[in-house]
Length: 311
Figure 1 (cartoon, rainbow, N blue to C red):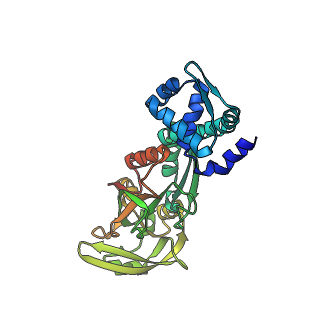
Figure 2 (figure 1 turned 180 degrees about the vertical axis):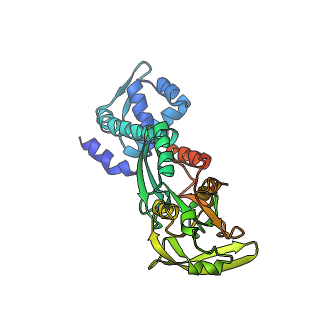
Figure 3 (figure 1 turned 120 degrees about the vertical axis):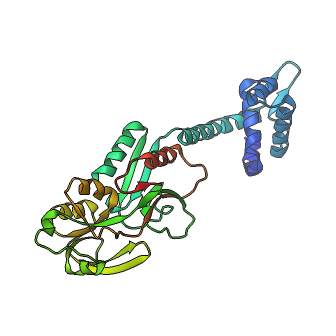
């Protein structure tokens, strides 16, 4: 085994491709068959094995005109190399398959507003369509570090901070000032944004049940501080309390439109809305995008979302 000891002392400088060629020759018992299997000229196969022997300082193969045999050192080297090389091939096949097949764990971060049955229903349908994918879902308004947290995709509303993340626009959203008929009964409707300060509101992401709403009307812009009877981090609860008449809400137009048409909500200050807000899917890199991420982004863009108008 002295020769093998010498082999391992020098293995760190050996080209893995040359090892793969040698293993193929040893398995097939022929330079010609190995060349055919590796899709390379016989002369290249022979040269690579010779280079490997020269680097190792040992003879691995005995060549005659009729026969090719492993030397003792060649057999030892083959026994040590063939199994790890097989593991490398298996690992490559697994990675290649995961790149081409939608499978594996999809780690997804979304804001609390998407912890809604409509978005969860979209995810349910997506998982049924792709049974090889498992979902790890983060519902939080915190801007998680996608790289540190190993997040595949995040959905983010509003202006993106400059970063190395790749952003794909999903659409835009604006919000309307609305209230239920039950709330408006016996109350004077506001004619200007400043009058919202006299109304009870239902708030999303407020501090001490106060928040500033920014509204636009063409080139006009207004900021008004409103106070809430109810404040929540959850869109579902905000919509519930607005619908039940607990106050005025600033709600996504895609949610409000059918409610207004059906008479369940009334739009106040109809010439005013929030500024348009972009919605993006962000992910760490566009290079070597796994198929699970690719199909998710495709289906998310195609989804008729009640939270944004498609880009």
